[in-house]
Length: 215
Image: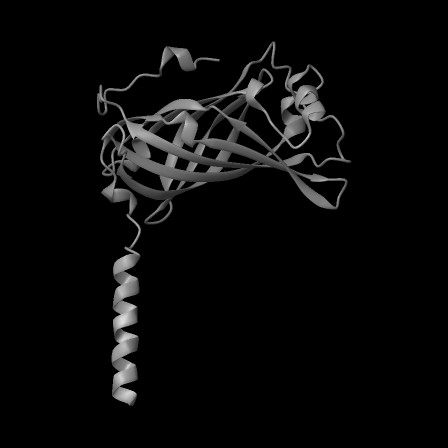
């Protein structure tokens, strides 16, 4: 009986291993130039509201480019733009206030813009991305902890795709949008879930910033 149970347990373990393949490491990424898949990418922010709960908002519609070579991760190039007009919370009145000149002033400053200046591998699937973030006309250096979440092929375009999740913290008052501090926390978490698709015009390491990504 014990042998039978041991055999069943072994079969279950093997089946589970087969159904859940080990995640790919960074060195298994296909090298080349990629573009953000906007509809599959989301930027989320979080603040502490009145000291008792976390409140979230989202910014869909990001665009941008990534050039990456798994043999030279530190030379990766990342340039991302996020439209302010897409800001959304659970409160439509607040959405309008955030877009107004009381906060982001989306008419005057229509995008958030991030350009990586340093990419440092920190593990088999993790990297630290340091760069310049521009919000509300103010540019400040920030660091993001990013995790490579997977790779595959887009069944609709047949192009190679890769995914990353990145997290970091900024002080919103540093960017001139400190209204309601400290009732609403100054420290703001940023969480980005991004899908990148390999550019059919892939130019590999021959990369220059997309002029449309300029602030």
